[in-house]
Image 1 (spheres, rainbow, N blue to C red):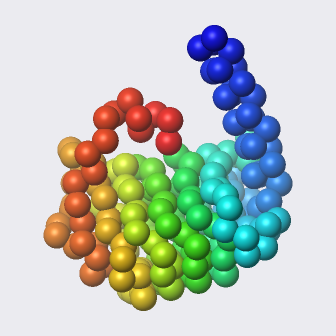
Image 2 (cartoon, helix red, strand yellow):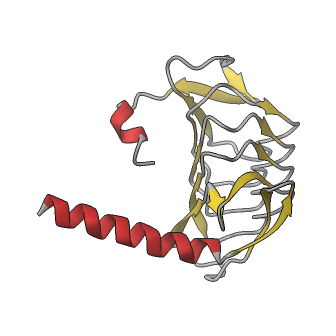
Length: 177
């Protein structure tokens, strides 16, 4: 039964991956992809999460561009693929339903106001070292806590004026995120 469940999970992931990839506009520069716009097929209904893929058509997604997800009121959770190094300015600004986001260890830079006015945002989970951040990254996000893993570096008591806290998660669980 476990084998069947795993197979179904993989098939579902492949189907969802294809669907999610079709929701993005992007540019290709030097063999890498920057997502420039998320085409929200659900409007403002806050019922789903989005996985930003590591690759699209075999090319690595290395950045999420300026305002790519801005005004995405229906997003509730975002998981970013392991190839993304940069999150642009105002990328997730005004995503009012966004409650948490998982950021891979590949991310080294987060732009200004990247999560501004995500007023329901409570957790930003980092798998790697503290990134460089622009100004007002969490503007008007008074509920957010930034979580980081043991063994990562660069973390202080705050990141962009928001409190940080050790993320106590079993390493095996990280593989599924």
